[in-house]
Length: 230
Image 1 (cartoon, helix red, strand yellow):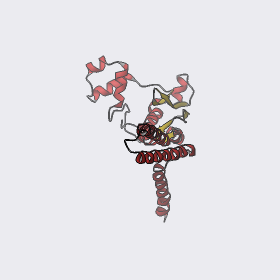
Image 2 (image 1 turned 180 degrees about the horizontal axis):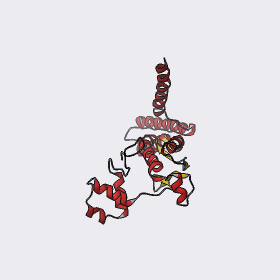
Image 3 (image 1 turned 30 degrees about the vertical axis):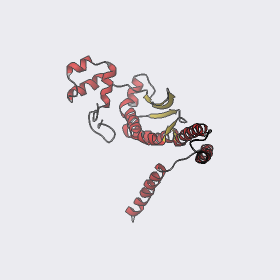
Image 4 (image 1 turned 90 degrees about the vertical axis):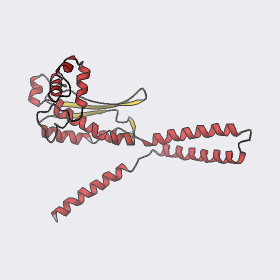
C-alpha cells in the first residue's frame, strides 16, 4: 500500500508535466488576430477563385494574399513565444537544494523574464541551462569560509539574464565565484590527450575556455551526484 500511495503522486506529477509540454497559453489578443487573418485569407481566396487568373484585379488579390499569409505566419510564431520566466521559475528551488548538498550559500537572481522564446527552443535549452546553473553552484561558487577569506560575502550569487540582441535571444549565466581556472583546464585536457602540451601552451584564454564544452570534460576530482561527468 505504501508503494502504491508513493507511486500515485509521482505518476500524477509525470502526467502533469507531460500535459504542460503539450499545451500552450496564448494571449486572447493574439488569438483574435489569428482569427481575423484567417477570415481575410478565406475572403481573398474566394475572390481569387471567382475572378480567375485573367481578371484585371488578380495581381492585386495575389499581393493581398501574400501580405495576409505573411502576417498570419508572424502571428502564429508570436503565439508560440513563451516568456523566459516560465523556465527561470524552475531554478530557485533547484539552487536552494543544490547549495545545501554542496555546502554552499547561494542565491539566484533573474532579469529579462519577459523575454519571449519559441516554445520548442525553450524546451530544448532547459537541460543545457540546468547543467550550466548546476556547474555555477558546484564549480563556480566557493565554500562560505573561502569566500569570507577572499573578502567576499559568504553568500554567492548566480544570475540568469535573457535579452534580445541583433535579432537573437541571448541567455547569460554568470556567478560571482572564483572563475574558471585556466591552468586546471589545460592540465586536464593534456591529461586526457585532448591536446598536446605544445598545443596547450600556444592556446589563447578563449581557446582554452572552449575546452570545457568537449563531451565528458570536467575538472572535478571525482564523479559525484552533482558533477564530474562533463
